[in-house]
Image (cartoon, rainbow, N blue to C red; front, side, top):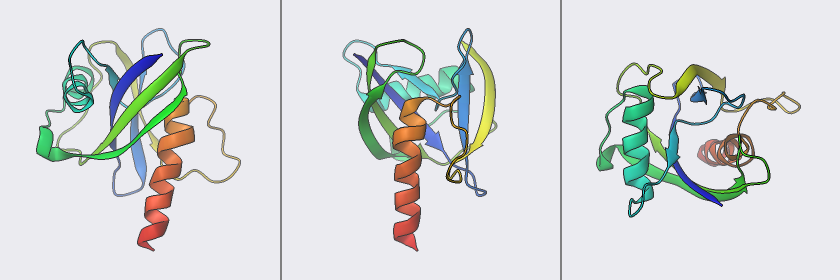
Length: 137
């Protein structure tokens, strides 16, 4: 079982920032594994700076949710993912192990091809974003 933390940046057009790590095929939210003794929030803040060069602090993020799902790039591996929302405060750029950045529709139409997205994003985060949007009316 992997334990990860990530940040969801949604722009004004309903697009979410995703990353693809070198040597992988799935796009996911920027973030990564917790270091020993590290909280999910601290891990998310550290990983965002390492992966996309965005510096955030505790007050900049709010909890979106925690889910259990399949890991994106490791076969037959479960994942516990804690995801936070944050406003994008700069221009993200691919750093460290990130091969590519891509903005994807946070509210894909039914039947949209989501095969290249991590399960945490497509099966958990996107439905929660839709639920929250619909609750706002």
